[in-house]
Each structure stands twice: as structure tokens, then as C-alpha cells.
Image (cartoon, rainbow over all chains, first blue to last red; front, top):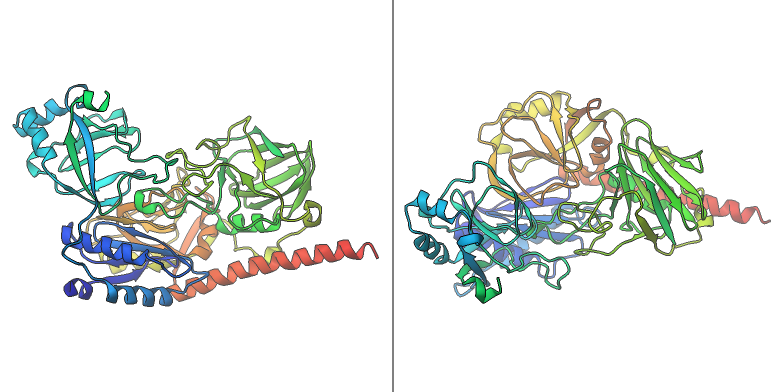
Length: 227
Length: 327
């Protein structure tokens, strides 16, 4: 823990934000510290502090310069960093995503199977075997950046992206896996589909997944979820 | 208690000061491009800073008033006509039921428009700001369309008493086609050669015509990089100067994504963002100067303080004249 505190770098990002950098590579341990720090900073922050935005190795803090000077924010952050501890027993929230794999719900599963040399059943079991850390979110509202996909499942994106991919589509793009959180065009290889809603602005909790969560795909039959 | 949209281009949208608190979920803040003009417009009509108004650019916006109130047009590149009579900008203008208001483009610019009482639309994720891609805010998540009708809230004061309040030009940022824009360096300076910083400070840049609310792409001398432009994605701010592999900077603005994966050489200071966004694509000349955070913050605080003091002073004078005329 101390070695991370020592190698931390804090810089202003213009006059209304600053960034705390804790590393330079995609690393689960660093990312866990990033999320612990973001949570600590968001617990009863002083007036004028805006949102802490965690990412792979950084936490960006937005603040209001009409209320707080850069040096005041810097001091507060250094105070928080002193108080930051990671207990070994800290377990992130696990989100389970019931997923119908293949057939009409995974039109590119045969492509992935062929490219990787596995059977379709083997692709599914390898994909569903992993607890994926949610390193950060972004790109579209509610979209999780998942880490930890089995590198043997890596398959290049579609040569011609689809004009429309439905929200809930589960796919692979290169060495990454993810779930479309809104309808959008897309070039991912679609291997499954979930009815679970990731983003609904009218709900009390608009987002199912939080950055720092862990995610697991649960293979189900389409009848089990009413498809 | 409504205003009807008779005619509009595609770039009219309802905005408030922005949707905050969801950037870690990938929801950009939206909000006004010209913060100074937006604040000024709201203050002139007696609204709080976060009241919802309309931003528009490029094309005329014509409205029919189905109630009384005051309106203020702030920003650049537009003229205000009330029933075809030209009225001043940066001024609270009284309108009554049946009046027609036209915002007519006059050169390039962005208009920030406020109505007394503010625009009432449902809040999505805590804000009325329009984000078309995510279908949030505004009227059903869309920019304004012909035939839209929007409701105004109750004004803070009697609109008649506010009419004539104005902001003197002395208080404005120095808008123009040639502007000087302050930059705070970082956070990815290690990706750039020292020469890149010199180029940014010594050369003039122009804005590409395909620029929009997401960001302004710049034309000029490319900035040499010593490390690849790709970085691990991290949180994004307004005014961030992103530099992709081409070396040509792109300044991220109101509809920027919440996170980004290109190296940034610096961030435009908040006090100077209005100068940048109001500088005409294709014509404007931007020059950058370096400044530290403390100086940038002082400039911004002074600018905002002078804005509200200027409007207060004008309100005092208007009221004094109204009271005085009864003696």
C-alpha cells in the first residue's frame, strides 16, 4: 500500500479539476486502490468538490474554483490519501448477468468458435467462467470496461460494423469483452444477449453496474428469461 | 404560461449548467458552451445560475410568446427582434402575450438565451440539459423542433421591474475573431516534446469548420510527440486539449465524452473558454498563452464577480429610475 502512496502523482487538470495517477498499466491491484480512493473522496467531501471519476489507474476530481482554490483541494486530497487503507477482506460487489448464448442471440458465436478453434460450447464455458473486474465505465452511459477475458477467446472485430446493435448484446472485440448498454452501431462479435437493463434513467438506481464492481455472465436458456 | 417554437435550425437545445455526478458512469455533463453568456442571461432575467435556457447557433430561432415575461440574449453572432423591432442584447427585454421573438444570426456565434422563471422540462439524472445521444433532458431528449412548446416557471421578480437591466460591455470577455486563450499545462506533458509546448505558444491556430459542441478541431502546425498518443482512458474535462496521432489538437467542449483515451497537452482556462467557443470556425485565429492554476482561478473568479456586480448595479439603477419617476 505504501509503495502506491509513494508513487502517486497529483496534477491540476485546468482550473476546475485535478488528477491523481497511481500507475501506468492495466493492473487489478492498482485499480482496486483507485476505486477505494474514489469512494473515500466521495464520502462527505467539502462543499465545492464535484465528482470523483475513477478510471484504470487514475481518479479525476472535479471541483468549483469559485468555492475552492487548487491548493485547498490538494491539501484535502493529501489528507485523504493518508487515511486510505485497503483491507484484504474488501470484496467488490458482484453483478450477475443472465445471458442467452448463441443461436439467434449470438449470431457471431460460430465465427468466434472458428477463429479460436474451440467448440461453441467451449467458448461459452470459457467466457462464463471468469469473474470480470469492471475497471471503469464510459464510452456510452452504463458501459463497463471489463478486464480479465481469457486471451484465447480473442477475436478481431467485424470488418463491417452493424448499423444497430441492441442494448444487452454481449460481445467480444479483440481481447476485450463487454455488453452494449444502449442501442448503437457496433463492430463487436456478438455471442450472447441479456435482458438485464444496464442503464435506465427513470429508475431510483439508474445504473446496474458501478465502476469497481465485478461481473459474471450466467448462461441461461432463453425460456428461463422469457425470450 | 408557454413559449412556442415557430422556426428553428437543428442546433437549438435546452441547457442548464450541466448534468453532474454521473461522469463515472459515462454520462457527459452537456450544458452551455459559453458559460459567461449563459450566467449573464439568467442573471439579467432574475433566474438562478442553473435555470434552464436555450442555446442556439447557425440558424434563426423564432418563438411565439403565449405569456408575459423578460428574455435576455447573450453571446455572439445573433440579434434580437421583438415583433420585428431590433432590441439590444445583454439586456432584459420585456415581452407580452402574442409577441413574436426572433433570434437572427449575424455572423458566427452561439446565443445563450434565458427567460424569466427558467424553462421547465423534466429532469433526467438531475438535470434539464439536453443530451441527444443518451436521450436525456430537453424535450424528450431532443434538440428543439418546430412546433415544440415549453413552459416557463414563475419569475423571481415582476418582469416589468427587470426590463432594461443590462450588462455593460466593459464586463464581457474580449470576444473577437482573434483571441488569446490561456492554457494550464498537463496532465500528459511527458507525451510531448518541449518543441510542442513552444509551437502551441508561438503559432496561431484556426478552427476547422466541422467543429461542433463535442469539440473544436484546430488547424495549424502539428505538435510533435515523443510517446504514442494513446493513453489509458481517464476522466475528461471541458477545455481539454487532446492531441491524436496527427498532432493537430482538438479542444473538448460541452458534448465531450466523460472519458478519453488520447494524450492531452493542457487545458484551456475557464475564464477564456467563452473566447474560444465564440471564435468563428474557418475565420478565427487562436493564440495560446501559458498560465498557472492560481492565476487562472483568479481570472475566472474576478470575471464572474464582475458579471454579477455589473448586473446588480444595473438593476439598482433601473429600480431607482422607476421609483424616481413617481416623485
